[in-house]
Image (tube, helix red, strand yellow):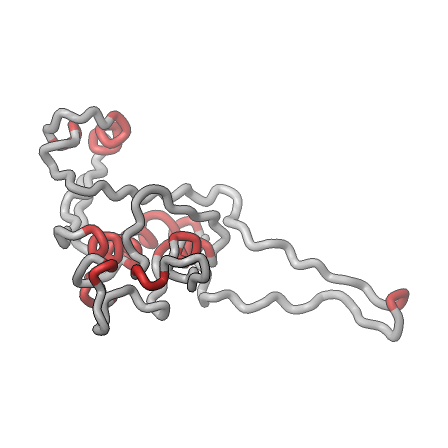
Length: 185
């Protein structure tokens, strides 16, 4: 079986990974659970309720997204390059080859496209975020990305490495921190 990236990334990930497991919530963000305790006239007449923390269900798959800057098909051994990629080779031998990801040739727009599963222009990211001007140039906070959707379905998420998606004027000790990796992953 040979897979290609013809559908938007989010649709492919949800279809192949989350939907078959029943992990996907119907509505995000999930509504707060109803209070199941009782409130009496005094604490002796009351029963507390401690809702369980949200977590991915038993058997939910792990999800790993990897983005490599300045790397093409000529690098990974999986596609004929010199860099050893044993796990990618194994996945490819089993028929899993995602080889039609659209690159934007710039790091910020490519990250925006990968993290949101949308065209980089549709999430206002046509340039490197640090070069953003007074025009749309950063992913709006109204755009939900894959890490946020995973987190709202009980997954623990994180990001490592170069970020390049926070405007310079927001990289201060005072924040705001919502466009930092800890706010988006």
